[in-house]
Image (tube, rainbow, N blue to C red; front, side):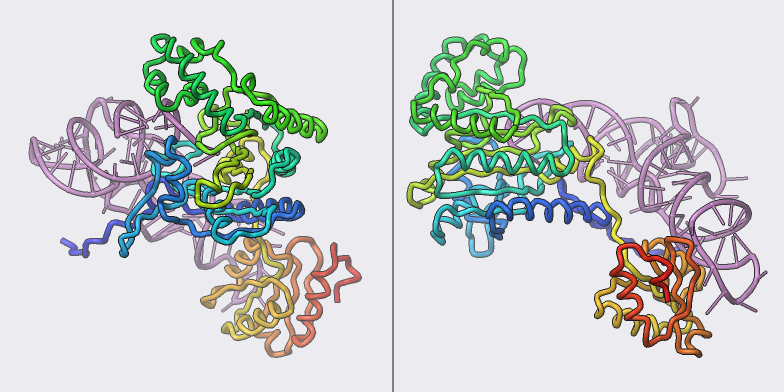
Length: 434
RNA sequence: GUGGCUGUAGCUCAGCCCGGUUAGAGCGCCAGGUUGUGAUCCUGGAUGUCGGGGGUUCAAGUCCCCUCAGCCACCCCA
């Protein structure tokens, strides 16, 4: 009859969210740093923007899309403002552009969480993270090529090989509008040949029918008019220039006239990167396009824009599937073992860190054996041992852990310099040892 | 929002079909193996509201119902 007090139900991360712990988080850091370097060298600067906005920022630009219609993670705050967690990166960037009016071309990148209220599954979460860039105020098709090349090079440089680039052109806003009318009419005439689920979309979102995965629909629309056959001369010239540019960079691509991306605002070039290492369901690892009307719809001046977003979780999933970009175990250079009460470890660790040496140590006065195990696990190249003998003689024992060199004693006042010198050598040789 | 599968130690899982003594394994963790030395080896140890709630029963990890969560698929997307 033990009366243990009822323990509260332990908390868990909310549905569709997840913690990223070391060592996996080391990969995240490395991936983001790699991305930052790549786009930084192309003149993109970091934009930090709020992860929530007035809901209109997102609603205005995606009224016809599921991302906005049913997946928005929205709420009312204590001031009764209707806000939404950012479902994707582009709208926030466009809003910041309208608000601050930087001098175009404005090239920014971000690494930020995105939120969608939907049921999680493989490669899909309520909070996921995107790496992205946006470039506003420039309509040059060579910028399209630059943007696509960056994402291509990003995937290639982290080791991904089974990635396919698919491109399409939505034409100008007028082209798009005219095509929507034409395709609606064409589909309407064959509506009984479509899968019922797709037939429902014909009236409001006819283009969505084009990228249906339902076999009945796919069979029914093989001869549907293609937007690439309905481009105005300007749009066609733009699209051709993009293709020439990609070819000149040696980037293979496939034109997919039925590629219709999930957001309403795209014009001209749209593109997706598909991983063939992932199962079909969530195989899109990145995508983007040009959105020449977006800034205007947010109250800004007519401004061209283009960008991409790529999901970090999916990219890392793809890395796992291809066996590339593994997590690197973080390690310290030095691990201090102190069996004399801890004051030496306490003070020496601070001294060494101030000298730029990475140091960890054991706490709680554990046994030497236990501390040595911790030193081994820490990945440190050297253990610094301070026992009663060392303390009495004012020295420390320097024990290499990664090779079979013998351990040495070093004067307490010389150890910081000794280690700093030792660790600055690429590969320590016997002559470097004291 | 709809459907399928799964929830047992920190992790991976066995046990459930055919209810029955103190619920197991491996890994990990902790400690010891001549009281100062890791990664191997040996020995020992700790940790479980058996996801939660209700029901059936003399008895439930095991059977039934509800619920929550995870995974997966649809939808859609990164």
